[in-house]
Length: 205
Image (cartoon, rainbow, N blue to C red; front, side, top):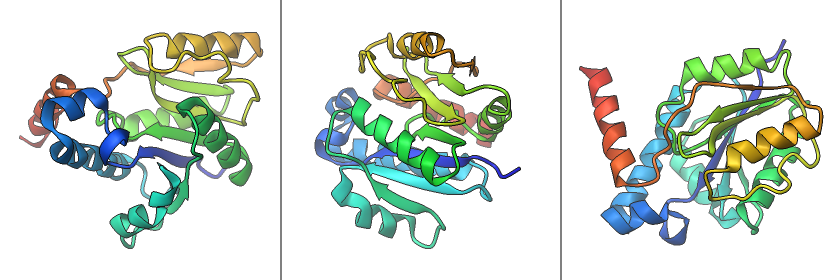
C-alpha cells in the first residue's frame, strides 16, 4: 500500500500572515525567521520518501516557496484568497482527490510533530476515516483523512479553543470513525517558541 501524501499548510512568513502574538513580541523579522525555521523543521521531520506538497497562503507566494525549497522534490500549491476554514477545506478536498484519497495535513507551527506522530496517523487511517493531532490550545496540528468528507469543517469557530471539539463533533454527526493522537503544542507566541527552543536544544545535547 502506498503511503499517504503529506500536505504542509504554510502561511508565508511575512506581515499579516505571521502569528499576531509572536509578531508583536519579537518583531516581524525575527517572527518570519521563526516561521520559516518551523516549516523547514516540519519537512525535515517527515518521512523523506513519502509524496509531499506545500500549500502556501497567499497563493502568489508559490514561486518564492519553490525557490526557498530548492531542489527538494516537493510540489508547491497556492491557497485560496479566503478565510482559513475555506482554505483548509479546499486544500483537503483537492489533495484527497489528487492522491486517491489518503492524505495527512500538517500545520507548519508544531516542531514536536515528527516521524512518530506521522507514522501513527498513517497506521490509524487504515481503519479510521479521520485522524486528529490535538494541539494544546484546542486546535489541531495534524489532520489525516482517508477521503474528503463534505461538511467536516462546517460550523467550526476558528481561532478559538473549540476547534478540535467542533471537528470531532462533526465526525460524530457524519458517522465518521476518528482517532486522536497525543496532544502537542503549537508555536504561536514567544513563550511557546522559548519552550520549543529548549526542547530542541535538549534533544541535541
